[in-house]
Image 1 (cartoon, rainbow, N blue to C red):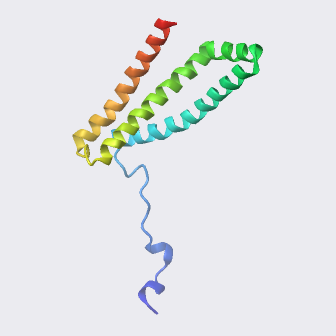
Image 2 (tube, rainbow, N blue to C red):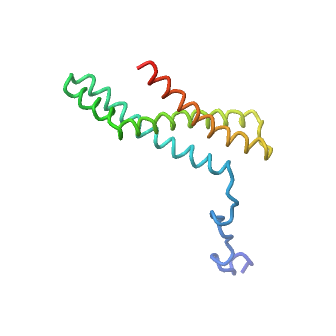
Image 3 (tube, one colour):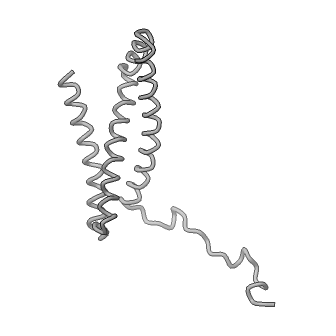
Length: 135
């Protein structure tokens, strides 16, 4: 009998790392937010389809959806969708930079992560300010 066969299978397996093992980092946070915004974009795209179907169905359906999207809750959801779209875009640009082999040192990783968050918040606010200005 070999040594591999004689040992208990469960006693020899290494424990998988879990969140308590890892030190929390900006890169980890942005990775999680990138996944969350991706899911949010799916939900927001469903809302876009609802709006398009309402627009195609006639004035009554369109007015109802416009009222809902124009309410405080509707605008809050649209604001979140705008932020998710812009944040996901900047996260994709951050990954694109990494695809070229740049930005892997500790300072650059943190700068790209913080920059992604700050730029997405600022650009979201700029888009909404411009939107209200031209309204």
